[in-house]
Each structure stands twice: as structure tokens, then as C-alpha cells.
Image (cartoon, rainbow, N blue to C red; front, side, top):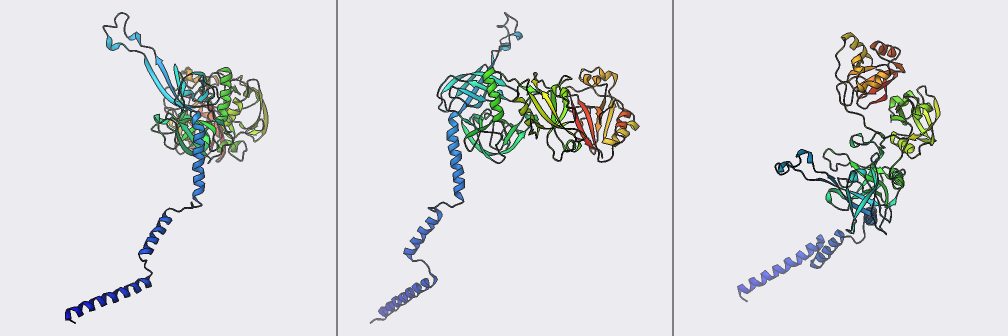
Length: 521
């Protein structure tokens, strides 16, 4: 045997020994063989895509199925609304017969167009939407989910609640179901369905964030008797959603989407809907009479503050504060209500906030009587009967402010500032001739608030002269009329630190009296 052959045999033997030791080493380390590697790949694939859903996933899947079912059920009853308002041509700018000489001054009819949403409430074509979607429209068109289009007529509108009813001529239409907005709870899931930003029939989801919201900054143009009791939601609502339904997970409409709170005019997390219980009452009257006739007590009301609750002996800050009366013939005033009273119940049902009282009274009819439970300043609780009357047409207060007044002596200013942190001046004879100050003159005069100290209890409560929304004119302190600084100081003479002082002030901008309670420093 040659040397070369022996070398090859040795090499093959060494390779074989190495292979045997390698298998043994791999077995000791439990490394997979080729077949087991394939098996491991199968196991990994099964782990990545489990055949049985995790238990925690099922509730979310059920909720998603509920949303899809509700959307599928309600969407056919939601409509797209487009409106047109045509302005006449401005012919006054061009003298008759001279149109050809001044073609640049000729202006044809101007058309304003708007869009919004609505939902069908009867099989024969009655549709609910917002008043601001169709207000002033000369033409209203409705498009259904199946793309059919109809010319609609406006049955009636109510600017005070921003509700409108329109009608299309058709039969066998899909409709929505109404829920109970009073029983809707904060935290419940809701869906907003509508036509935002030209994206037709869009569904967004969120929860009920709050109830009983008043939106002074979003309600411009609403008359003085407007009811504000909005449902707040974080479901995305944008321009075009107005008039669409807010729906719970049972597929019931609990509100009409109406407004958003945003600096840009687009969704920023805060949407607002009109409660459906209020809407149904308005709708019934609009369909029956074409208008809403409200009952009122003839009283101006405000939310209760901690000082108000303490003054009348309430342990909780709740109820409605009586600020002023619509006239001397006000049913509430005749019934025995007084400024500074706190209404805690109506017909035995607790009253928590302003909009709640407004709704309950508005659902009554003129001529009906209501029983009011009232707390007085001395803590006494009384029951007062008030016969309701029809609400007059509401008007907004003017925005003009009274002219600036001259200063006063430094000694006098210091003495008034020391008590409540305010500086006041008597209404002059010249001021008394101001039409905006007629109510002040009728009461025998008062003290104009000229300065409010940021460190005093009146800061943020009284509006000084030269400030938007003011000024306030103080008429009474603890029931005593005050027309001079001396009377003002005398009325506060017995007030000790921690005592609550009741002021009756007339706000010039809002053209109404208000009750302001302050704690003495």
C-alpha cells in the first residue's frame, strides 16, 4: 500500500470520527436536526397566529361588532342636506338705463350654499336637523344613503334650541329609534353619524363626556329664552355633522349633533349634541303648529355658586339662583320669589342646574301652574306656586358700553377698595339720561364699578368700566339701596371677615340685573 493511499485512509477516518463526535455534541446540546428544524418552524408559525383568540380580545371584538351593527342599522336613516339662499341682485348701485355704461358695477344674484346632516323620524319623510342648517334657505335638497334626491320643505324651525323639521315626499323610508337622553350616563359609548367635511355618511365613535353643558361662546344669535343643555362627547364632530344623530350602542338616538368647541373651527376633542328628549318636545310642536310656544315664569336665573348655597343654608352647591325678573308683572315675582332666592325643586323633582329648570318649565303650557321649592337667605325653605305665561320673543342685550367717567377723590377711593377690593362712583345726572341706564335711574341710581382689584373677592365677578361685557352698576348691598359711597360703606359696616355679602348689580351690556355674593376678606 502506497504512502499516498495510507494518507487518504487516515484523512477519511479522521473525518468520520469528527462527524460522530459532532453528532454526540449536538445531541448533548439538544440542537434540532433537519427534521426538527422544520418542526420548530411550524411551531413558531402557530405561535404567531394562534387559532384560539385570547380571552382579553373578545370584549373588544364584541364592541367592534356592536359598533358595526349600529352603524349598519342607523346609516340608511341618515341624510345629507344641502341648502341655498339666493340674494337679489343689487340694482341700486347702477342707475336705471346706465347698466351698459357701468358693467363692472352690475352684480347678479348671489347664492349662499350650505351643507349639513339630518335623520328620518317617520316613514313618510319627516326629518330632524339643526335650525342653522336650513335657516333662511330658499331651497333645501335631501340625499339619501341610496343616492336618491328629494326637494324638501321646511315644516318649522326653532332658533332657541337650534332644532328644525323638514319634510320630503316619499313613503316606506327607514327611520331611527329614539332613546332617553335623561338616562344617558357619562362614560357611555356613542356614535356620531353625518356628513363632515364633504365625507358623506361618516361614522365616528366616542363616549358621553359630560351632560348639561351651557355654551355661551357657541350660542351667538340665540334669543334670550334659548335653552342650553348640551351633551358633550369626544366622538369626532366637524362642520357638516350638524343635524346628524348621536346614537348609543343600542342604536337609539340620544341627541342631535350641533356644535364643536375649537379655535380652528374643526374637531378638537369637544363635540356637543342637543338632548333628544328636548328635541322630541320641540319636534312635536313644530309638526303640529309650525312653531314652538313656550311657557315661562318671567324670571332671569343663574347657576348657584358656593357663596349662594352657604347664604341660603344648602349643604350642596346645587339649584338655580333667582337673578332678576322680566317685569313687575312677572308671574314668579307675583308668586313671591325674590332676588337671591335659590330654587331647589319644581313639582317635587330636584333641580340641579339652570338648563334643567328651563327644560322642565318649557315642557309645560302657558296657564299651567308649578310648585317651586325655594330656599331664602335666612335658610327658610318655602313652597311657592307660579302660574306660567307664554314666552315673549327673546332679544339679545346690546353690546354698547356707557361713556367713560371721571375719577374721584383718593381718600374716597381707598375707603371703598379696602372692603371688597372695588372702586365705585355714583351715577351722575348726565349718566342718568343714558338710555342704557334707564333701569338704574328707575331704581333711584347706583354705583358704577370703575376698578376691581385682582386680589379682592370681587375679581372675576364684577365687571369694571371700560371692560368688555360691562360695566356693572351696584344697586343694593344686603338689601339696602346704595346711591353714594357713604351708603355703600354703611351697608358693609357690620360685615365681618368671612361673612357673605349679597350685591344686586345691573350689567349695562347685558341689560339685566344679577345677584352677586362675595365673601368678605
